[in-house]
Image 1 (cartoon, chains in turn brown, purple):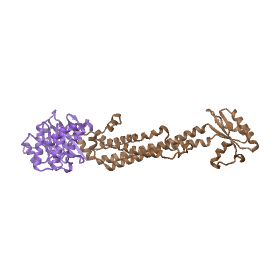
Image 2 (cartoon, chains in turn orange, blue):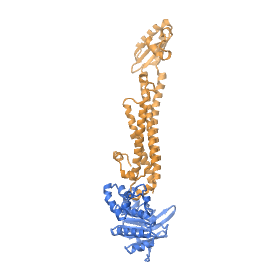
Image 3 (tube, rainbow over the protein chains, first blue to last red):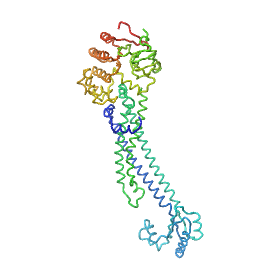
Length: 301
Length: 238
């Protein structure tokens, strides 16, 4: 039994008489529906996790990849002079598109989450920060560090690589784990359907014997089981997907300042991706049942 | 008489077994056995319980494959046929089992129409055929009954109706009167004789000698006997 367009059409069209030759199995049917629904629900979450992690990795990569900071830690009297010297040096450095010193208000905004809005930045020995934007070609961080060390003793270059790389790597790994989880869920659906189909075929050995006696081909017998399990997986997965999408939709949103957890969900056309879960579950069930049926029917004399 | 008498080389049997042996579990159940069922012939297969009557019948409809020799169904060598080819061939052979083998969750009329269902014939085409057949076996009123609700005789007649609904060329019956009284066995025999007069080839496995004698009074029947794993033509006393 091959998965072709004609087979899918025949599955959808159905054959009432052929469906009736296999007796209904209430418990197995309910179990298959439940497991398919639960797996689809989990698959939607795995997809949401994977896509959110992907977005985060891209965002961190884009936002931080071309930005660096120079920190000027110098006594009050020298800070302005060293800042000006550093800015001059940076503007002459190949690979740097722009460099500007952050204003007092911008520095205060950066510190606000930790120290509150009333922090008197001016009266504190807070280092002056310079935001550096690279050209697409980038600059040589080692060379820049050496020049800063020589010409601006209080300047320290932070090119963000130290903490950007592990974060981006972690986000990419999380994205991959999400996809691996989705694959494992598909495999689990396949395994569950195989077990259920094997049980159903074994329980119906007498039915199969009668069908063979009256001239039923293996394809006909397999079809009766395959259609049943495929439709159960499709129905269960559709229900689980709807519940999963609703649950993701109802996740609290963090708005513009969304972190990873509050940003867990689908964005834009990504909301369409969960629609693939029910047909994929049905395809997995189709293949699993067809393989199980072929093996069992081959083993029965 | 040796089993060669049951086989004519180059014959046109609808079912032919040639020097067939069948072994199972290390023991040989049938040995060097040849049989030819000519179109329209009527055969009885007899022998003691466990002699291999059912096994021989299964070889005749491809449910078993010989471990040696040739089995041909309508000229096709069973060894060269896959399961689906055997299944298609089986639509030309009606089989009546002693235990009837029904699908207990389906009513009688759907069980009788099952060969048409698996052959893909639509229900409109089935209806007329089915009505006629149920009337022929006297089960018109029992169409909606489930198999467990039927008596032994009703089950046997239903099994016969199912066996012939595809208008097969051959009808094989395994102890069809094993579970019914004498009156019912005579009724079943009359139906089988009627089928033979319509040109069907009939092979009945039975150990009921009275049934064989009754049949020989109505139709020219050949009686074969399995003894010591081999097939022989029975003596004139039958």
